[in-house]
Amino acid sequence: MGEKSKTSGEDGEKLASDFFNLIGWNANKKGLSIPCSDSNHLNKDGNSRKTHGVDILFPAQSWENPQDFVHHLISVKHTIKPYVKNLSSKFNEFSSDIQEALSCYKRSSVSSNYSKGKSRIENIKYVGILFWISEYLSTKESVLEGISSSRSFSDSKFDGFYVLDNRRVHFIRDSIKFAKTDYSKTEFVNINDSSSLDPADFNTSSTVMPAALLASNVIPFKSTCLGRVDKLINR
Ligand SMILES: [Zn+2]
Image 1 (spheres, protein in one colour):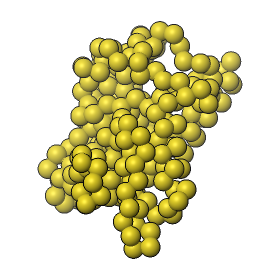
Image 2 (image 1 turned 90 degrees about the vertical axis):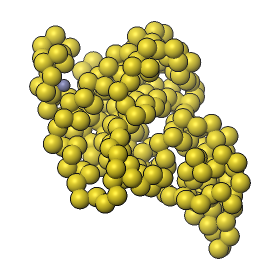
Image 3 (image 1 turned 120 degrees about the vertical axis):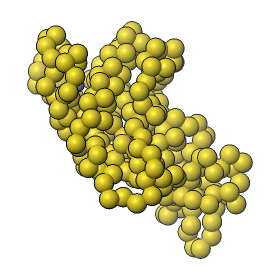
Image 4 (image 1 turned 180 degrees about the vertical axis):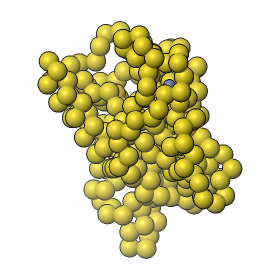
């Protein structure tokens, strides 16, 4: 049993790293241990925590809004079984964990070191991501309907909170595959710039996917092959 969960954890980490590398997020800060500074944060045995685990951390200056430095805290939950029936309760448990980790991360020296020395930074932001995948990837199942009314969304201490389930991960992977089928060089477009979906409005683009696109039903790309600019939309 222990061995099985270990394997599941390792598979989850690999799936998550591959996914975040695919969207241009450098997923090399993995398995971090953040000191806990709040005695109300308890572990599973009911004792005060000493540390919080952060599965993947992606701290980066935003290219869409260069005045923002964003810490993306990613929690990876991978199961070898189908998704549980009681999604809300599981979601509340997972999101409480990541929110507690966030509050201690904000106070830690780890977080302040990343933005040190960066120019033009006016805001420090925190985005939480729950990468929640079941073994049955091919089912493209979604957990989002089951948790949309969950309390933890509205209580979130994050500047943004995203849930990536099987369906979202499939959609984003397929969109990137779709874009790369005909175009070798593609970049993500800032969705705030592209509400009209007119290529003329696609001023800024990057190989790093904006976090807002993680929840979007439209993934706009810009292709700059052969000196021509095309727009590619997958929805
Ligand atoms: Zn803590």
